[in-house]
Length: 243
Image (cartoon, rainbow, N blue to C red):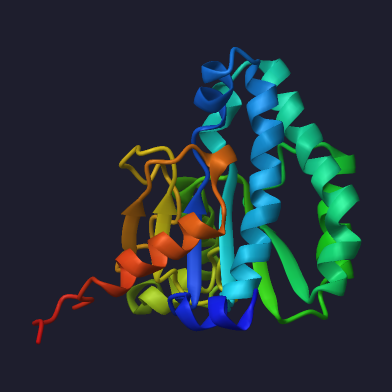
């Protein structure tokens, strides 16, 4: 980013979460298969990660594959998994060199062993970085995450290490996939759809929600800056009284 661009770019929220939507519609508009849209969506991910780093975002969480996406045709699911593999294979060294730490959120029981090994590899190789914390929500669902957290608390109560009557919000939060980072300040959704789609349900309680009318494969730094400007024009009361 040039010095002039840095001066005019809006200040970045600390934690930005993005629902990457519209790959299929983007491909359909071009009479291409859905897999082509997903492939171009990976290019948008690369642009978004670079833009987030340029703009000073500390935590970037991207919704890649949801627990509900298992309902899609098997061919599309396998193509999405292959894109995840290719992204890690091609980008791991570049991410490491640029100070990006990668973590993958979501359950791993349904994933193939080689994909789990690849996830563990990228997390391990980037563990020492702290310029940008990139979180990929893969096989992730907000309800599933909360269910897993409740199960963990139930086991602690069963084992006598936790009093059920003293469970707090902090106890639940420490068992969530996102326990290592702050809640999102801003949740962005591309494609114009206006719903959370089971994404960060607990964590988004007081996040600002911005919907952009752009399909994900066309998403770039300009759209991220637009979301930041909308965010800064809102008054965040968090249940209190505005000024």
